[in-house]
Image 1: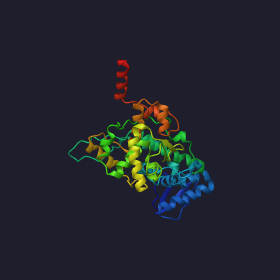
Image 2 (image 1 turned 135 degrees about the horizontal axis):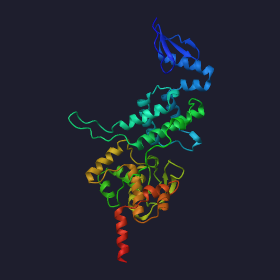
Image 3 (image 1 turned 45 degrees about the vertical axis):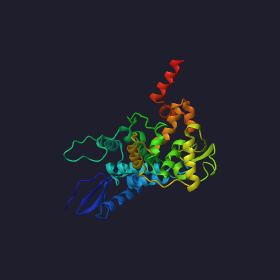
Image 4 (image 1 turned 30 degrees about the vertical axis):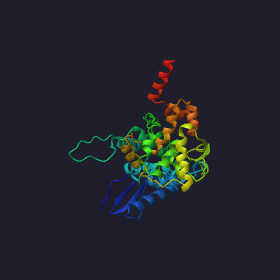
Length: 357
């Protein structure tokens, strides 16, 4: 007779068959397959204690899939999250499954598991490994990145609390403080740099970038733009429709202000002729980076182009609360922390004007 020690699921092997040590008794699970045994063991626990049993029955992969489905209408939201949000969830899920185990049961997601996850991720490096002859100078995963991944895990666990397949309190599992300081991104182009970038792009893609900068649009609005959103074929309307989805204010009519008039005309001309902007998938980040290199500009992403709208307004002296209104934020706090910060060059120009008076 061969008997092995119990694993973390309370299972052990006897003569090749799997058993469950449950309370004060040993229960034969009548299988040699560990996955089948785990589910039968969960059913036994569920009969005795439905709450605890549910935590043993649900795997991390199943929990993430359930949350992904819930997120479409969760909280009775009027519109589903944008596709990039689901791309972010999927990237976070992949790391959670890789480090914690896709088949890890929710009963085992505890403080020790989360602490191990944080330590593992913070030790990992970002980017392609160098050759054997070169030193590894890649940066490690940042605290901000891990903080975002833990934010997704928090949402999964919170859903589990509501639905009964996660029994621990969230504050018992997740750290009280993320340890990550919010560092706002500052990448943006000046208005003088924008034509240099557009000159390196095909006309449809240049019109797309002009649309983002002129209207402070996000990528979801680009994908939803329609023929007459910016006015008819003869002239550009001064108040145009932007079909954003990140919050209730992103889907709104937006004024076209003087600094962005020519960019809006370029975007309107393309939409009026073609009805929508050309498809531009995930390679848009790579393509923009290549265009920036050709133009001798710092690398920017579509999000940085949206930030350019706010930065141009801030550099012209527009108050942060109005910058926030133009970018359709919920309130002015983000504009004050990120988009509303004036560049050092703009501050210098204003100081020079004041000192000359």
